[in-house]
Length: 112
Length: 121
Image (cartoon, rainbow over all chains, first blue to last red; front, side, top):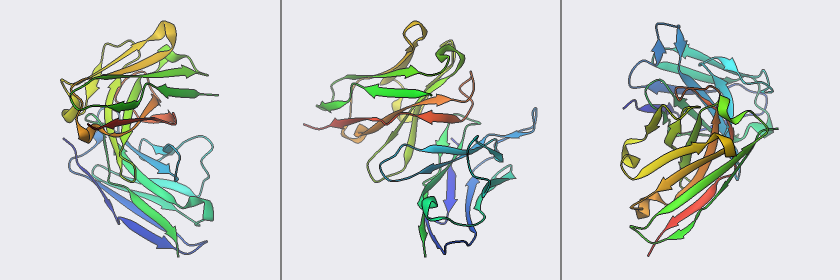
């Protein structure tokens, strides 16, 4: 099984500042035949289901603000929020879908 | 608008069975794979199972293999999860989720509100 490890577990960032969350997979999720990384990022606010933010590691889902961006390849990935807004307070999860599916443990993002 | 509405959750004794359903609307159901994902309140997400558009490809998390069965009825725009030999640790909110692709090796781009399952004596 591929294990997904996020860091940090929690993060406090000031409004307007940059937030970055890291995700590391125990083995590569890059498919060399199509050069795609099978990695997605989700945002979950209290009392709500998860919402897809990023897929194929760096493709922003339709309607997601462009302050959200995804990067990385192989085993190391990053979700960045360029200028934190109050509505971005949530738990963020990475997920690999290359070999079955596994989620990271989640990163709780708060306002400092 | 994509809508996914789960039902069938409830309180069940350990060792018993439960069948969850998910009614889908707002998209062409038989074009997409579908997933079940669960979440213990206050904890993280745990992927459960996925089924391709034509039911030819099915996958389960290791801890659910042999106990849970995913299925779909494209004529009824419905997804199901048959859960047998339930354990206390299966207690969670169960989400139905739509894939972004027809195959199971894909992200999920729409989620229902979930149906709660409590396994307790």
